[in-house]
Image 1 (cartoon, helix red, strand yellow):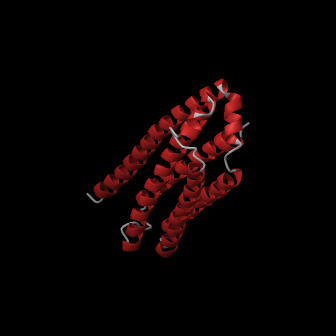
Image 2: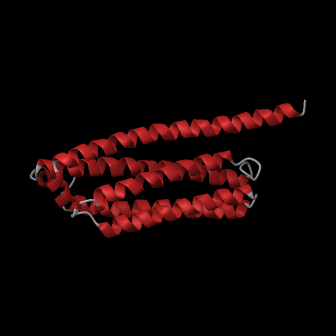
Image 3: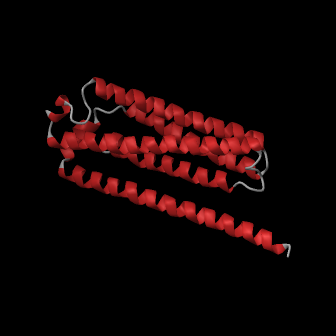
Length: 204
């Protein structure tokens, strides 16, 4: 009789993890299709893509890469802390992760507004006057980095919700699957950027 509740919790944990991995797989398919589309257009308009890429700020892209890699570390440390039932440490680390996500978005905001101030945005007269390949490059740039930015915001919201649970004690050393799943999503957000960064900023 005493084994039934334990067995039920174990099945719920496994089901939750499998559900999250399935969701992450659909996200990989989504961005994988965009990466494939980018590769096809880049092969067709290599010179235009190269010239357009030189107009992006490698410095800002590098800083944002460091920010997200650091945030992956802090969320991993938060998971490790909660496993040891160090809720205060886990809460602080989650707060740092969310702050790093916000810093990433602030940098991206300044980068986007810089391009928009120059008249480089979808359907702008300045952009439409450029070559077809350049138009495609910036179209993909805004769509892919914008979609990634939405995922960053979603990840921050999820982590904020888990942070509240940690503070209330509903996520603790005995029940931390929600933090693990949110951490997996955040790692995916970081991984996607690690692919976006060289595609738009580095590859020539």
